Length: 255
Image (cartoon, rainbow, N blue to C red):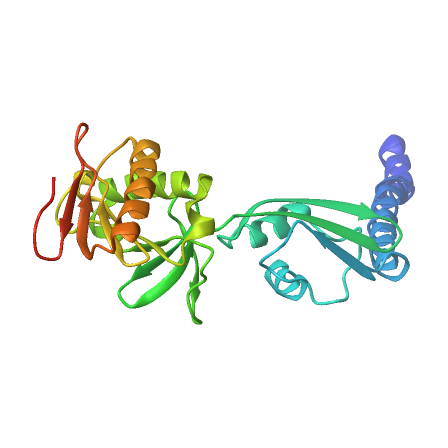
């Protein structure tokens, strides 16, 4: 009985001791939480973003990029998440890759790698910039841009021919063709394959077909000079055959 009474008398002291042991870690955790929270809040005071420097962007402006990133103007360098910002920027077809650098105390650098427009696509009375993979970059509301080849037709209705059309455009851009002509139009064939790919250069229609584009373009340049020298009105030029070229004037065929 005496032992039971002694235990009962000591029980409040034991309970206070356990509460004290539990309370100290809780107080420490609360202190750490509010300390971290204060530090984060203080970072917005001590490391505000005052300068954003963009590099590598040619088509997209700095203002457009800021909107795409979702920046509101009250960010801290510490609080900026490169993963979130990159995900926002990569939603644009113009942005191929992006990198960031934080220059404390107040500068944020953004490096952009933009997609380069390969050609213009004229489809259903609308005009788009497209890249080297045929992706639509942006619709153009103004007049066509003369320094880019024009692809006419619907690539979604003839994907096999469109891939070859892109190869032809790359060859054309790698030659001096683009610098000497006012308009180069590559026509996606309707209801047929790459063997019926055609090019209209300053009004002259040439049937190019599939493959050997460098050699065919060289022959076309030679024929153009001869046609201009003779003043011959031409309906079309057929370059699809390996050992012959067909030049069809308006009224007759010359072989």
